Amino acid sequence: MGHTLSEKLIAAHLAGDGGDVSPGEGAEVWPGDLVEVTVDLVLSNDITAPIAIREFAKLGVDRVFSPDQVVMVADHFVPNKDIKSAEQCLAMREFARAQRLPHYFDVGRMGIEHVLLPEQGLVMPGDIIVGADSHTCTYGALGAFATGMGSTDIAVAMATGRTWMRVPETIRLVYHGQLRPWVGGKDLILYTIGQLGVSGALYKAIEFAGPVVDVLPMAGRFTMSNMAVEAGAKAGLFAVDETARSYVDARTSRPYSVYEPDADASYAREVEIDVSLIEPQVAFPHLPENARPVSEASDVRIDQVVIGSCTNGRLEDLRVAAQVLRGRQVHPDVRCIIIPGSQQVYLDALEEELVETFIRAGAAVSTPTCGPCLGGHMGVLAAGERAVSTTNRNFRGRMGHSESEVYLTGPAVAAASAVTGRIAGPQEVLS
Amino acid sequence: MTNMTGTSWRFGDNVDTDVIIPARYLNLSTPEELAQHCMEGVAPEFASAVRPGDFIVAGDNFGCGSSREHAPLAIKGAGIACVVAKSFARIFYRNAINTGLPILECPEAVQETEQGDKLTLDLGAGKITNVRTGRTYRTSPLPLFIMEIVAAGGLVPYTRRGLKARREAQV
View (cartoon, each protein chain N blue to C red):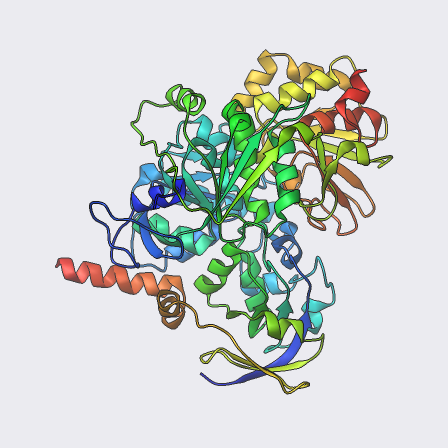
């Protein structure tokens, strides 16, 4: 019997003696095996690194396993939102300096981690990547096995270059049909989570496949892999094709390994999804699985729109928003906050005059930050307020007060809703 | 391991880490500080009313969402003896094991437990008794490898021991 992408990637990284399967030529792993693996990249950020650093100090080692492979990004509560956040960033900065980490990214050079790392050429196909951030699964879009963990796991990975994992079963999702206008990666993944449910892929990996994703640009793939965790998944992978190769080759000359799932691989579940039926989606409060077609969201008045995040903060997302906002005005009752995902995205958006389009439309444009997505700063909601957001979670209180509401959409619906002051599809605004 | 008895705090499905510890408190990092805001997003009275040795009893996918280790730390800081759920989100599961917060998957026990029920737990044997109904439930034991992490007191002491052994072997 053949193997899934995840099984092949894990088998290629077997290490040590801490697991059910020992490394060696031709070693195979199967779902349910508990194995020890080497990791290629270890990530943390300003809210998870401080705990990881504290735990690292208890391990009895002085240095990280390989400074080149330990990445730290100040992105959640930066530019520092308060004194305690400043102290957390300081702790991370001092550690990064002491350990001489070449890939430490601070304000002015940072980006939202999952936009930044692929853009910087730090994510390679065939890698195993662990990050103290649940959306680390974003890198599956480049054929890496990438998963989120907590700070203690990351402390151990920083010290040893290894981690343990249970080999996951895989759900294969096959997308076919013709995409409708304004339907992108975000709509596909919201629809998919609506079908699977927020625990539908619990402990499992997802493989995204089919003719629709084969022609999906990288930005849309990152968005889909990013939200695999919202269905409970450990990872969300795409097989590497020419689109992925050109993205990586434009950013790094390091060699990498490409794996294909076997035709006779065994899947926990295979789901066929006909995208011809999918409208732009809106996930209603308070779970990402509450996805509905935008046409069913009638007269939901909103107070705020957020366009950005690790899910939809890429240049392609901003282009879509600008297409809708160009020559129009944000509704007087709406605060529209647009956050480019990295310094590079910000610069590109300036050069393409997208930033000018946003400001002329009456939107606020911010330096990169996770800020409002998790109710940190730069757009926190009051009781009773509603936001449309291109972020990834609409849990109760996620963006602020526990009596506020978040509706998740792609950038087209978010921009259209900013104009109308209620949830609306782009076609309504453009017609 | 001794039996523990405590009162149940009953929650539903998909209790996410944003309600366990809202992100605005992620600028804190000690269990004691975090415990002051534990479950604030879903049960604002919890942090002041919870007693050491109490249990959280919840539905499917407990701890879904963010990877924040602040969530199990907040629960541990609040003195919760064990979280019993129908299932756990995987990052939370790892974080609980790694930080030494006892957790058990036991759908039947969850199904038949009400808010305020007294539970007795024998963690070593994986046995839960509901004092009100008199019913006893058995859970499947943790995999051996994970039991070793728990027995060592969490991932850090487990790894520290392994690293020390590796260094000594090299000498």
